[in-house]
Amino acid sequence: MASPSPPAVLEARTPVSPARRRLPPRTRLAVAAARCAAAVSRRLGLGSGGVIGGRIALRLDPGVLPRLTRDRTVVLVTGTNGKTTTALMLSRILQTLGEVAGNGDGANMPDGVVAALVARPEAPVAVLEVDETYLPGVAAQIRPTCLVLLNLSRDQLDRVGEVRTIEREFRAIAAALPDTTVVANCDDPLVTSAALASARPLWVSAGQRWHADALACARCGQAVLHTPDGWCCGCGLTRPDPLWTLQDDTLATAGGTALTLELRLPGRANAANAAVAVATAERLGVSPHVAVAQLRAIADVAGRYRRADHDGRAVRVLLAKNPAGWRETLPLLDPRTPVAIAVNSGEADGRDTSWLWDVPFEQLRGRPVVAAGERATDVAVRLTYAEVRHTLCRRPLAAVAALPPGPVELVANYTAFRDARQQLGDA
Image (tube, rainbow, N blue to C red; front, side, top):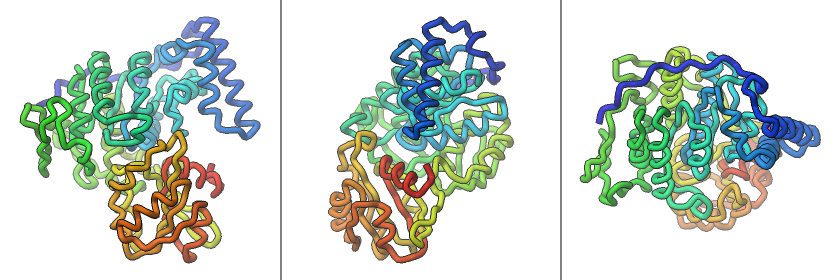
């Protein structure tokens, strides 16, 4: 399937102040109260204000979201993995067009989205990552210029639900936004099925290692055939022809232009995020060469990949919260370096840890490993069946200290990662 002709290049709008937007009194009150609450939260050390401000604004004015996004160029980024990284990449690129509002702290539910807009009310551009569950509601209110669909796989089944349910919701919102460009990874059958409903799809071949959640067609239920050249189903659903293709470290356009990424961020997944970010930015008027130059300056994402000293150990903290994420993270680990695995089961993590059985922990055999976190015992059981020799220590940084001096890889899911960053002084 070939992509339709691209729409005209979009340009960032001139900054518009809240007063010039003619916000109603109720919205102006909500914005003022939200900014005050966020400032108090930061001053008292209670948090970054990335949630409380938005929560108060929504309580005072339930219609604050569409009013704050009027007259802005808005990009929404969603998917199971890579939201924070791709949103950061896009923000850095689009800063060449003007000030950018964004929820770079990962607060990707409606409260955090509103708080990001409140924090920079005059920014002409907004890049907002949105949790998959909340995307339909947020997108329907904002009606974004671009909607970025990265990937879909199983994650937090007790909160998010089955991945095919999410695909159907994505498909419905893509169809309901005829003026929105939907930038989609065509190597993911679930994402493709959803984006095909869009009037303006932009296809990027960013690659996809994890196929376990797309073995059956989202449209008809038949088996999807995956080959080195793509994928297809007997019902006719097949991989579209991409306008952008990532091959190793090279991003090429259908017209033959090729760019070498040379990112400082490691791994195939980050190259895939970069490919999608460059394609989106080009649609918004930023030259691919300028976009790639912006991306080469990024060395970490919200503390991921950054090293910190702890008790004589150089700790590198990585985030992995589901099987697809672990598949991308395991190749990044130095085979000579001990590993601490920290898994929590707070509300933000999902209570269900059955996903541990889909992670190929067998790849960790032969190196020192420690199971940590609130669900350290679950991790230890899985490592036992993977025949990985390990010890158990529930506190992640105590687990790090139990390993030999030198480099240590600490791989954690969401709240364990957040807590480790705070304890290492990288909040």
